[in-house]
Amino acid sequence: MTQSIAASKAGRREWLGLAVLALPCLVYSMDLTVLNLALPHLTADLRPSPTQLLWIVDIYGFLLAGALITMGTLGDRIGRRRLLLIGATAFGFASLLAAFSTSAEMLVFSRAVLGLAAATLAPSTLSLIHNMFRDSRERTFAISVWIASFSAGGAIGPVVGGFMLAYFWWGSVFLIALPVMALLLIAGPFLLPEFRDPHAGRLDVLSAALSLCAILPVIYGVKVLADSGIALLPFVAILVGIAFGALFCLRQLKLDEPLVDLSLFGNRAFSTALAINIIGFSTSFASFLFIAQYFQLVLGLSTVEAGIWSAPSGLGFVVSSLITARLTRLAGIPAVMALGLFVGGLSFLLLAYAGAERSLVLMMIAGLLLAFGYGPAVTLTTDIIVGSVPPERAGMASGMAETSTELGGALGIATVGSLINFLYRRAMDGSTLADGSTIPLLARETLAGAQTIANSLTKADGTLLLETARAAFSSGFVVAALISAVGAGCAALVALRLPRPRPQMTPTASTH
Image (cartoon, rainbow, N blue to C red; front, side, top):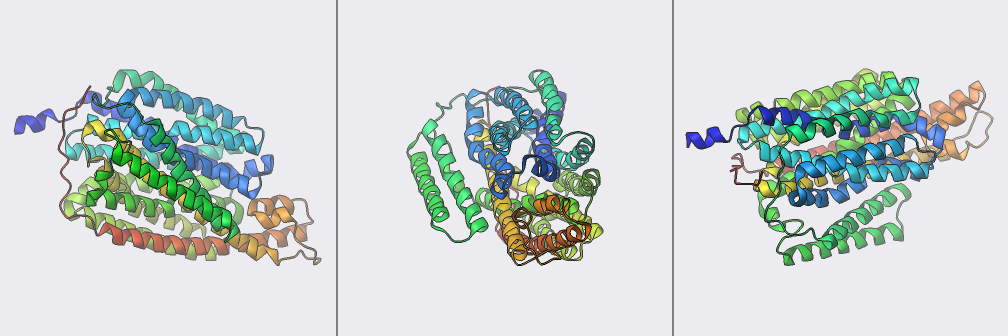
């Protein structure tokens, strides 16, 4: 027994490989956070419509979420390292395309390609970790490092992106990925072992298409409902997505080698962890996006200042993720996860108060509190999901874990973002300038548009317009934060359903 445990311990190559795997995770999150800072700049340059602006933000997460399961399963078949290196190459080329976009449509397309490329990165890195670290304690710590690298990217991204935006054009933020991906391509073949499922069949293309057709219409319908109100088209889109989802599930039940093993949902720990991911990330993703906008457009901070004030929350995620293993040994998984999500709910209440008071310090504290609460929850849900399957199916489980994360985040950005835009436009519709004239349409659609219009008006009219627009955005921000607090509370209640004993993750044989 002792010899078996000792044999499962990771060596120097595995720990060096973990450092290499942290690189794409770093870029993965940096690509999202730097875009948050660049939104006001690209809005002024490309003049996207409100719908185009939402798609610039959303399309990355939508296609990423839709392709994650397919890419995770593909890694099981062709090799996780090979897929990771292919994805890194594609991500680099897509970053170049996004950096030099000359229109809103071109940037939407570039972000779509980035989403598909990014879908190869997260499941490949997570499934490699599952195979490289067989000891359960080492794997929990390795996943903590994996989560911390995402958080470090979130912390570094605003600072690096802020400095780049201060001296270069908005597209330069996408070029940050190039040196990191180049380093991965150089070091990966030497430090990362290759893993694949030797008994996996061919990838079922029809299942992959059905999964994409199930996810995208549902997200589109939710976004349109929140943005434009009750209408026939979004309801039809949601029903179409549900229908494709049903067809997807029926096909998986008939296949000998399904894209998704539906029997996993009978595992209470697995299904509960997925639910927590979706609920939790639907609140946290949106909050970080709109905090960045709030710093710049409402509080008037520069990109560098906004990046510096955003950094503590990312550092909080790093610290809280790394201490998760110790916390669970002291209190157990359900208690740690539920308490963390409850703390996250309190942070949203503080965020709502800070938004109403326009307090920079309170908003920073709220972001830090959110990080300390959500960090352990994210680490533990990922560990539970991936630890529920044998190593040869780790790619599929990793894809499902990341799909629940990205789907929750995309839904959160779509619904919360559309809600803020709806409340903003509703507040601005009845407003006028100092001379009684109607506020221009661009200013009534987005706060960034109001800032652009204000620069072309007289000082008195510009000041009045900005104050009116900032008050309208702040009121929507407060409502969104309160809704997020309710979502975090619901996730905390779901966490209490987790079984008390820590799931046993018994290593099995896999192909090297």
